[in-house]
Length: 329
Length: 245
Ligand SMILES: Nc1ncnc2c1ncn2[C@@H]1O[C@H](COP(=O)(O)OP(=O)(O)OP(=O)(O)O)[C@@H](O)[C@H]1O
Ligand SMILES: [Mg+2]
Image (cartoon, rainbow over all chains, first blue to last red):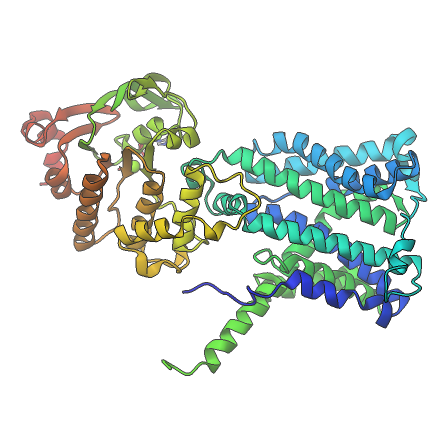
């Protein structure tokens, strides 16, 4: 069986970015709002998938780094008046730093225990965010994180007068697109190849000369850093950082989005994020039983498409191509 | 080349390897044989750092490497294959070998290049030498069993080992496949000047290519020597060869 080369040559990040740019001009304010949400979640899930799909590590506590990013950026901007251009990368570094410390312990454990320990650390972070009133605002959260200065976006030629929400949307998709470009490259690099050998067979990976734990830790730190970026954007978008960003249900939500979209493809998890956010909006406007409907949808998808939405689409495309191709042409 | 001194390992009181010594000369081909559960795989795992010995030493070119972790052992020039085939199932055949080359050359820290551009020619050449060139683009996990074993050999060779430990390289192969696999091994070992240590249940194979044989039984070395010596050993005939006339 030869491997699928579907769409390998298309620069998807650029294509999706160029389409997404039109949302404020062509869509409603609500569309821009949803678009921002989806873009942030997309970055969050892609960062998680560096662990899940690329390295084969299941983290139940990825929200920790998302939340740390949100708080770090929020505290820097609100409490210390640091401009966004500094607070944003700083949020990534701080999240990555925590990922380094927590990950150091997590990668020492195997599969299930790794997952449990990531969850344990996330709950510890949650408890600290929830209780440390002086810094995080405790159960009140950290409201009124200021918007970054974005008038320069409106002054770009051809963009005209944009609302602040539109400007923030454009900033978000730009940051997410840049992050995607970096992560895509990391996955394609020799480093990324090493991660896939660890996913497939850690025992053998060690015996081609890899220090498996060190590589796992490096992946954990990179994933944590980008989750931190997503969190930083989310805090601004939501006008505040709150302890529930770090709660275990948030970690479960990204895990669901990631698996729903398909962990074997770079664009699987973002499609999952899109599907979940969109379904959530659609279904909550018809019924209050959203969790129930979500459960059913997930069941159907997981059994019907074990490779997630994108896995299912690719399999369907492959079948179609085989059917259409004349035998032994 | 490789000098193993009085290596012992017990699992919860059960002594799987009991004071086993084995000295292997450069370019020598050594077979470690013994009935199921004799401790052959455990012995290999002790040498390659997958298990920590309770006592004893492993010397490589006179240097003590006892208790060194597997990834370092691999870098020191010891390659191995595993009894249960151990490849990267979701990567292509070429990518399997390419990954091993990248790891061995210390390229794994490179974030900014494209992995598929590295060592293509070398990887293809290596696949050619083990007879897998035509399968380069197949997903490794879909290969036939015998081919997976060949690929595992390819992965081991990519690390450019001096000593190669093969744990039942022909397990599960038909008689013809076994003969071909061993011919391939002999040729590669010759070309590369490898020091080969392997375990094998097929006595015909063992006695045809091994220059030295160590017989393990219940964790102990029952006999050691040239094929002729081992064949003549009364104890070996009684306990082991006698079981398989
Ligand atoms: N990790 C382990 N924990 C406990 N017992 C073990 C472990 N590994 C091996 N053993 C035991 O040690 C003994 C030697 O096993 P080993 O796998 O080394 O034998 P072998 O000679 O390779 O056998 P085979 O020919 O079946 O591969 C067996 O009795 C086995 O059950
Ligand atoms: Mg064995």
